[in-house]
Image (cartoon, rainbow, N blue to C red; front, side):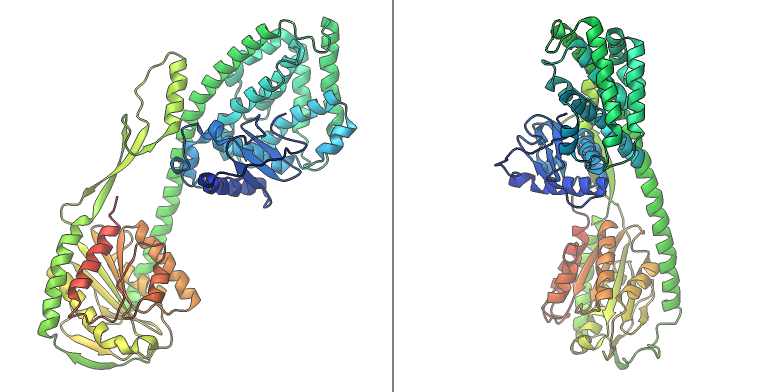
Length: 590
């Protein structure tokens, strides 16, 4: 069998650099599916020991995958993307099936091949390896039934290579016995359906006879029922029985070793039967995978909606708790106090006008998404659709194909702007409290001028309401910054519960006024909520009032815009307005 190797060939090649990320993803999948952590992967030209599209080498725990055979010669790593993501697995089901097959070997074929080859003669060892092919797939599918259709997509690729490998050395009886093991064995394993291999079943029954086919299938059934991964010796008698049945039939018909008379005619019949099975399987699995993908997407959507609904409900409760206190002044849980209350200056009013004009333009970037399929190359190629179309064409069915898929976004006509502002009043922000107070008032006034809604909290030892949604600040209020910690997580929840940032409509913006010096636990919350904002198309502007080192670190990997430097908001209103616009536009980018 070409997919499981006793030894290794010396390989001078390494995975090509452009395929390293795909190889890494394959390693993640193979180790996960096999319950191991030691499998290493080689992908590239000549992988599969130059014979099969994929193989597993137990001695070195190495998985090889020929990417040209698995993904298609014209497929590039960029077209594949992250193979650990389910949506990309559905685009390349044959490749995923090949990887899963080798992972099944890694899981199940942990017995000593070297010892088995010494304990059995050549034909008995070959029979053992033949029977092992369907046993490992049965165990794999029983453990992970959701991968059955992927394995089914790759089955004919595996079978054809196994048949072609020994076609010139096998007699008619041996060839058809191998077909029983490789094809009908997968039916018994639950990988293939009877309808998939109708022509193959007719052919082997005609050549071997129903009685012999039934005997071989009985051996397969018993072999597949054996669960051990490390001790193969109890299965030796079944391998010997298989060889004995085949040899007795050959003797009865007068076939000798290396007797391949009429084998070319039989191979043509086998080839035709396998081609018919391949077309049937391609069409059937494509449709079943589409249905499976829809069902999984729907289940995931239900889980996500349920989770978001629970989170939204909880955040609203936090908002009720925080804003139910009133917004006149801070309560006793903080060490910070009100040190100044004044009317806004002319410069601050001018700043609010400048920022409001930029917000007015930026808010129209809020967009709806529509997915469109196309016949012409535009967007992402769905290879599965092409495979299904070719399979249908081979059966004389011509249908319109739209293999290209892209997402189109359209502007919302009149989005409402919702802005949440978080102001840090911990001790590390004490030198910035004057400009922070100005920033808070300017943002509140700017949002009011564009008929938006602004909600604002201060956060330190606890979270304190400053501005309820729909209200506006009439004065600039300056607090001391004496608190010893920062409750970022609770502050965000209060704003989300007040404005419905994550699940609301219209343009949404979060403004964080903080240096970002938090506890490790709060840093985790920051990254979690920034990811949620990016997913929900919520723009994020972070103003640290320092050089922004810690803020930039916290925002890495997100779409947040960090506006660093010791800013005077009345002098830097243009920069703040531009940063707000940039934050809103980044989440709406194609």
